[in-house]
Image (cartoon, rainbow, N blue to C red; front, side, top):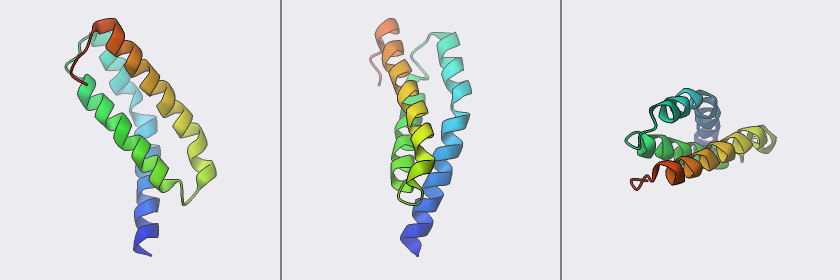
Length: 88
């Protein structure tokens, strides 16, 4: 029961984080500065881990959020190359 509760909590955290990280990415893109990039990148990684762990509860529920997270991670890599960020 405890593991199921943890997985369910991770699923909800991952879903909420996926759909609320957009403004942070937009702010990062607007500022064009690398200082906030590590925070955003860490949140993306934490969200991915939460979705993967929570996916054991509802595997079909994480398909679209994982695609979104993958797109966000691709954006972060492009941002890193474009602005020569070395801090993440």
